Length: 76
Image (cartoon, rainbow, N blue to C red; front, top):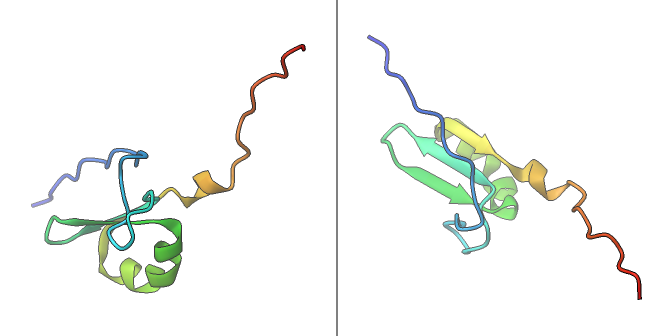
């Protein structure tokens, strides 16, 4: 028997780190069905252990290295 796992939704600004409350960029889904959310700092700090216990891991820390878009300069 196989169990289908629905893909996790993308993390949003409303998703907060379970350790410090900062914006979450890593979701760890556990075998028990629970999930843990971590900011990039705590994801790096606990990354090895989290990968050991994760059934599924959603890592969106790449969003932190992108170049933000800027508004066009307005004429003055």
